[in-house]
Image: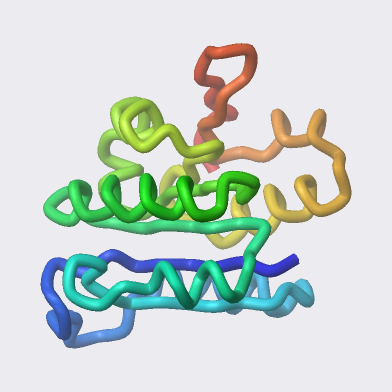
Length: 155
């Protein structure tokens, strides 16, 4: 699958160290054979929308901190308008601190809670194979089912 991952920065160039969490997830997905595109950006300064649109991913993952959540909201909305068929996943510090608020406000398909390498890898396997009934057994996820939020338990 083609997957775009975005770490939403506070301000352009503010990251002294690489965003290791999203890079661990990217490495795990790459090992599974997926084609990855990774961004570490301030979307209010450097737009990544056109690059993501041209890549045409089936899955878009967005990670943010609480202080970058408004930027993540704007970016998610814009990407949903441009790529309405993509599956949206969020994660990161804010998603883990406030999972219910985050999934409701971003209206993403899935939220990865806490450490995400295993949960995300397994979720993507289920999505790729069409084994959607198995998603309920993937620990560390919040997702929508019949208009309600389901939590699969801690990872």
